[in-house]
Image 1 (cartoon, rainbow, N blue to C red):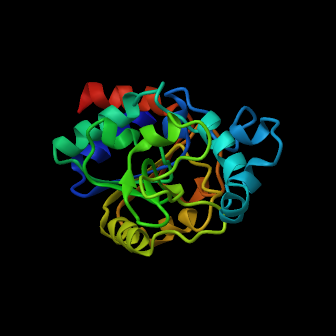
Image 2: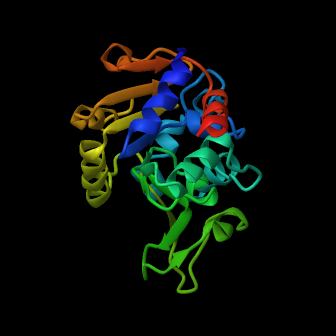
Length: 241
């Protein structure tokens, strides 16, 4: 039995599956990830992206922040891929209980998934810093310069920037989901981003599975490691489940 067949067998046997995903889940939709050689962090810009995507930079250089954000983080030309679709199908069939994602593109919801815990927020939610009125992403990406609320306040994306804490309620729920899981599938992440990567230490279930093109520091701790594309793996899952 090969690795994917083993995974499919475990999926069939499991009752509480949780999927924990990173940037690699969305790169197959055409998005650039932030840390690969062709990722956004290697694009030459006026400031390092780590600095631009920080709370202090947003507050003090809002116009420059939005020049980068509107140019590099607009996902309107992209759509969910096979991994997002199959995870949604697994949820509908009662096999998948929840998705924990480090991504901010909202593709899981676009594909139909209902229980999605977004650790780093979403570009699809934006709010006025003065009156807290919420806006979708169109106002951000269709406005030239800094988007403003009807009250005149600056609109901020509901994403976790550097220097900002994660949403404590979502963190607690994510850890609780991992603790309940009998099968935890980790996909498309190098597990180098903290504190999110540390959450997998809360898994005490039966099978810990990692699907990632490259090796990670956690490979030796997993029951099954598949170094292949998520698209290939989830295409096989779709065929057999």
